[in-house]
Amino acid sequence: MNANERRKVILEVLSQSSGPVSAGVLAQRLSVSRQVVVGDVALLRASGHEITATARGYLLERPVSEGVIRQVACRHSSAEMEAELTAMVDQGCTVLDVVVNHPIYGPLTGPLSLSNRYEVGQFLARCVRLGAIPLSHLTGGIHLHTLRCPDEEAYRRVLTALWELGILLEE
Image 1 (tube, rainbow, N blue to C red):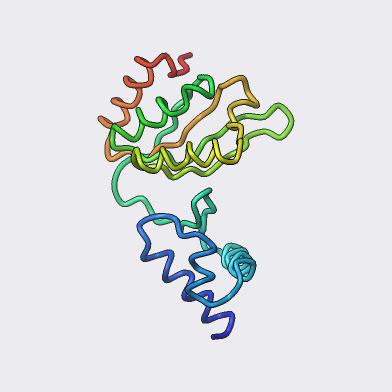
Image 2 (image 1 turned 60 degrees about the horizontal axis):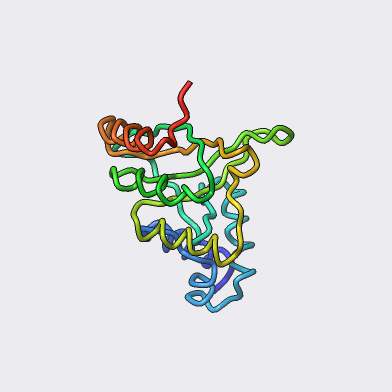
């Protein structure tokens, strides 16, 4: 299989997947190294394919056919991260990313793509295993989340849940 065929297969696998696909899984399927997959994905991105790298693997961005995209401002400690993320996914929303406004670098975004409690649990376990510090640590706990919600009502439920937790950052 040549490089172009390999990249077509990567796009096909990502387009058919309902969740992130790791470079290791792609490498096994294609009988190449993980580094070859990383390079292929970089070239696919450079050619205009919207591929997002998350902590759990690659996602091919799809147009939003249903629902709404909204941002919510939050402030909390690292210990409250699970309650925050769970409150959002429990309302039927997907937490697409986290954004902090760094005083030197400006907005820094970390892709998340968390849709349910299992994915939240996996994300938090990985944070613990790697000793990772949340981006919000850079800004005193203040950050934004971009959400994909099925409708405005789900977004309003998120706001209510975060407010009840004392996490919602209000003006």
